[in-house]
Image 1 (cartoon, rainbow, N blue to C red):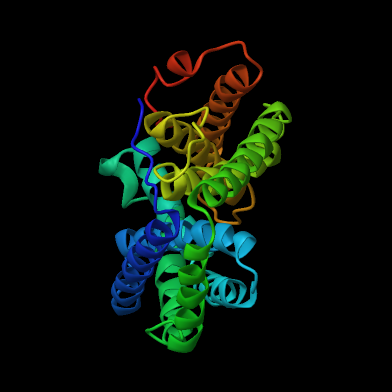
Image 2: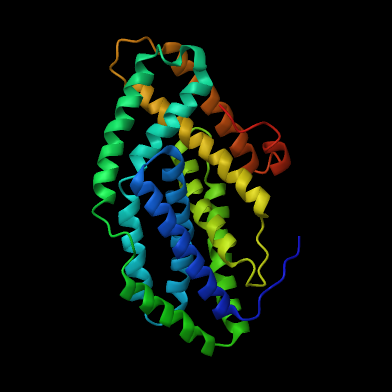
Length: 286
């Protein structure tokens, strides 16, 4: 679907930057108050979107330090949330696999709940060390850099941004070619690349003439499918290394089957044997 391309590129970037900062700060404030599954997810998402935008701005600004330093601050905020998010997703996946009726009887599920409580305390301790507002001076310096971009011809600036997005897309397509159904790490690498590309598209596609190979709906579908594979893989590894007395053989088998099926389906798409429509016909659940 065609979209309107904004002509005042620098002003658009400035508005997008302010909006992204504000959403990130709101998400950070909520997560700092209570790191629930929802608040953790929203903070991670808003952070990734802001990081993608900052990465693009860093490439086009003459002084790269303001964007680079802000990216480091945001990465520091995210660092404590990865393990907590993994446990929260593992709990959800486990409920889908074994059902609500027997979940409370599972010793493995209870151990995940204990891990979640411990990691919540750890995350809160880390988040409380971070200032609620990103440093005002650094944000002001970056804003000044973006304002200076108004001196650059809008068509030239759009062309440069198109090149950045095109490069990101080519990196994704190259990762897709390297995906192997028996190597979940290869799919994880593609997922990380694709996530950056997806958020870059979201930030820039209305200000540049470049048309991404995947539209917004397709990007969500692909990201969801790769996320399911990652979630299954993490839970399978956790089950495999569990030292609990509870027998987990049937769960391990179910996870392995679901993971193999999902990886095979995804790689059938990356290798050109299935279309995206065929790939997304099945619901993205374990």
